[in-house]
Amino acid sequence: MNLQEFTNSRLGRFGEHIFIDTIKRIKNDEVIDIHEGLIDYIVDKKPVDVKTTRLFINKDFNGIKKYNGHKIKNIDYPYIVFFRDGVQVTFKNKMIDFLTWKQAEKLWLSYKEKNRLSFRRKEIKNLKVKNSKKIHLKRKLCTFFKEKNIRARVICRCNPEIWGKDSPGNLKPSQKQLFIFDVTIYLVLDNQCNEKKVYAIPHKDMEKIFMLFMLKKPRLHKEKIDLDLLPKKYVFLDIADLKDKYSRLF
Image 1: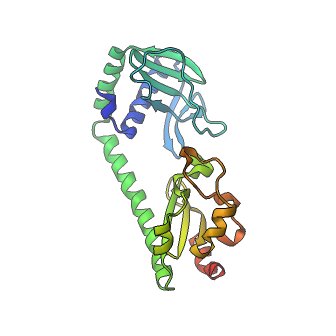
Image 2: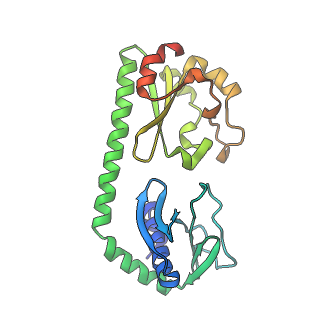
Image 3: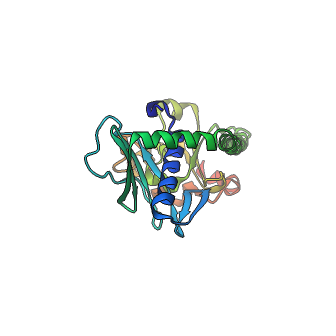
């Protein structure tokens, strides 16, 4: 088992397996498998989103690591942390177990056997459905604007509640993108790729946007637009609303 070769997705699923095995073995809490939206499980009647990291894989355990990433109220965040000398399992900011690597290896074998085929097939099917929805929505918008002789650049923003204002989809368009396209459209989608909101900014207005509506302290110091600050002129309920009122942008 070489964690460095794991994809983030596989590492996350293995972390979930470790947490559920530990919670059943030590606390005997009721566990319901949900995997809907931002919730992985219901544990003792409360939603949880299991987080896993291998950032400390080359260091020995020297104290409990707490999850300090983005959180949503009323959701618990169990934290599975891989160290060189074992695996930390925390729940509600308390360490409920520290596994040896021998125990982790055993859990890895049981995880592989349990999920070898069924989970992967379901995951691939769901991913294909979501990607198909995104492509369809993008094409619908690009085709509509093409018929108006407007070159549209469409960005899908999925699960904005995770990223908040600092979504990767909010990146400032490059000079090349500003030259090639006439408008940038930010399509906000939920976990099932349903429309939640649409932002549309004509590139003739971008200079003003860059001056007034940029995120103050973005992660990684990359310039991003603060969509929440945009005037109502650029905000639409959904694609149908944008099609009906797009003329106010030009």
